[in-house]
Amino acid sequence: MVENNTAPLEPELIRKIAMDANPAFAMLAGINLDLFTMLKGKTMSTQQMADALDVQTDKLEPLLYALVTAGLLSLDDKNFSNTIETAHYLIPDSSSFVGDHPYLNPLILSWNFLAALKTAETIRAGEPQVPYDFSSRSEEELTQDFKMTQPIALRAGRELVAKYDFSSFRTLVDLGGGPGGLSIAVTEQLPHIQATVVDQPSVTPIAQRFIEEAGAADRVRVKTVDVVTAQLTGSYDVAVLRALIQVLKPDQALLALKNVSSIVKPGGVIYILGHILDDSRISPPEEVWHKLSSINYYDVPAPYTEEEHRRWLTEAGFVRIRRDRLPNSDGVMIAQKPAVALED
Image (cartoon, rainbow, N blue to C red; front, side, top):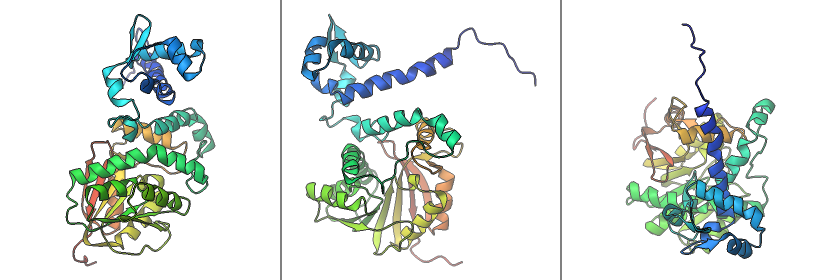
């Protein structure tokens, strides 16, 4: 086959790709400066906003006009206001704030933007250039991270019990549950469920504090256990692993699922929530971009494909495996432990 080397008249695709990141950077700056909150229900000039923020007008003004160009602010006679979409989704104290979305949360956006600049270096070095390790972060750092990402877990918990029937479950284990957001939300909706959050030593003291502050200590308990290397104890109707498999190496993922299988009751169910790639590895697009970002902070080849999840779940003894998706865009793998032990 002879290649057609005739160049297009203009590098339209390349130009579009090069410019697409700029509105996202401007949006994140606006969120971090609380611009959209400041404009809630009102119109303000550049000078008024600069005075309120105690910043220089000539530094703030380019961002404001960039946000107008991006379609996130409206401009009327040099006065700025939120657009309808911005007012609905970009004000943190709003119930519809995108902070509870796994791709749009401001902290995760910041991580991904920072990581993107290191991709070539990571590939050359063969190791993450902005590594993130839960065990080595200080309690203060983890607490701040969890405050920013807790809305994602809370939403995931609410959506999980809204979409699937948890009415017959009495006990839930939330493995790699972080500060317990998913368990807090599940037990708020279904108070008959007793939940147990399992995580590593650097996380569980923070989880205990978050759970107590949420008034959920009577419904959610905490255990300090390594899901991969330690023997898990207890017996549960349902196990949930949110954002856990995607930070483990393949052999660790299989070991973790085998461990989980040992504490799920016969007939019980496992839900894996998080980032899941199609087997083609080129879709969904947001998962492809997440995988590219992830190489910069996690030394694992995740997120993994549907087929990889199916294989590990099968090897761990689960059956009736299927894939789904929550409204918040979390991928979901669902499987059941056989009610009767399968013969070899």
